[in-house]
Image 1 (cartoon, rainbow, N blue to C red):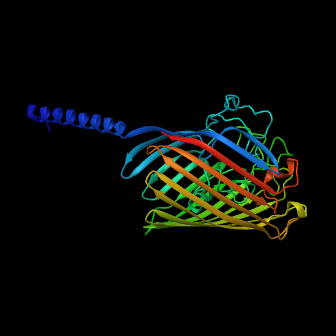
Image 2: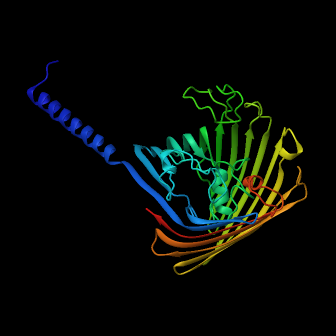
Length: 387
């Protein structure tokens, strides 16, 4: 059947309308894509006393980790979003450290190895979020880090005992895993779940490496421990809680024989200007070659914060007990106190103090520093700027 001129004109106008709608839709999709930049700059004066040896100077990260974050989100429609996160932790007081080179000497005020800061050395992830929850791939923070942040107010900085009496991973040397996958469920009546997986790799170029020392772009070409973490969180009204169980499998990785389990329970309750926190953690391993490398510890702490106008006061007290190994029965204790004076919503002056009596010898640097005293104290006065 032939078309009349009117029908042809109507079809042409319809096509023009559809093209215009498609163009607007494409422009709208672009408008719903965004990239944001945020971060933290933290530095000030610090003093460390370990086994009677005192070091003073100007250092970063007294209250928070200095970092810059690039975050991107694209709205795909129907509640589905694509997103990515690239975090870079930097050193606020050392140009040399930010070249990617190690400092000399190799240990800093905190007694840990000062590897240089480089771009993308923090959390990396890319994935999708929607009604199903979220799925991400990358080098992703473990849920255990969130549990530690919930259970005491000092995070991984001075006052909380991170990497000594508490840790995210069994060796206390990291908070995230290379080549990892993480799934977060939707929230149901305040409850949510999380699952993180990173496969063990035993096809290293350097067969003597324990983990992550011979990197190659080829999958499976470097030694790497396996990690599997399951967590459950709850947040509703004044109460929040986080239970997390992480298993680390280093058996057969290089010369490794150890498998470890770290279980962490944290809770916080807000009552007006006060917040009360609780943290419990157990860390056990199997397959240790000697009594000295056997780990079986249990840790418990209580903490609180109180807000008075621009000032936030915080305190933490806890103890760790060694239940096996060469220090079986020994205890390490921690006291942390701090204060923030908020100059704005993003900038604060801070003071931090931490005292650890490490009779259980859980501070990794303790064996490498002269002296027989088991005590470590750290003090920091500084400024923290968020952006």
